[in-house]
Image (cartoon, rainbow, N blue to C red; front, top):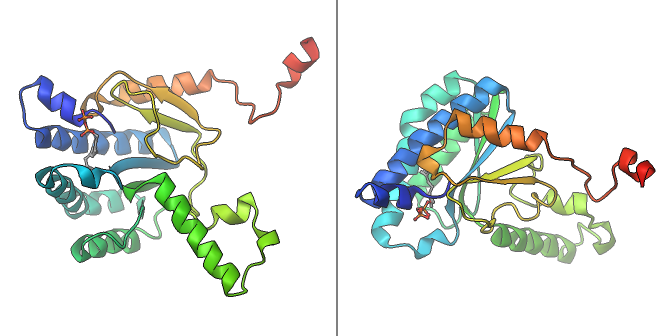
Length: 230
Ligand code: FPP
């Protein structure tokens, strides 16, 4: 969800105005994804590197997460959305952790759309935390090194309950992943859009899905028809 700051700057507004508009775009996207029957939606709301931003902006973003959960949770629950978070919880304040736990437990039985919010999330941090847990399990004798496989490794990641993403969309014209789902996105299709996140709406989501549908996914293999033709 990139480009909130530049969206605000282009309008002569403070960055918080861009983040507020970003929350509105997030609400719309959750609704549209639900309408389209998309089963999983993961959004990158705050990275483990975002702590290097000015304290005032960090407070704004933490405040927006709290407001989002407080104000939108009832509606999300009513719409059958299951909300879960990925990212390091240890570094978060107690009130935020409690709100996250409340959102997760209230919506635990919902089945319409799985909304995964990446907060205090960084892929390298996640992989290191998973590796540490595996090393502890090996040291304790509950896992043998030869039992570590790609599948078993993935069960130690924050995303152990989330299927690998088919499509990753980044807004604002930046052409990089910035530490988002690096393991999980190994074979994801990537769509980079020029619009800033607050301008991301139904048309942009449908356009990204159309682009995805035109891709040929080989997962490292070959396309049978082309293989024969060559
Ligand atoms: C990137 O834009 C966006 C973020 C760092 C935060 C994304 C957050 C939201 C959309 C709102 C928060 C939502 C929840 C649920 C907490 P940027 O600030 O890097 O923009 P810039 O690159 O133009 O400066």
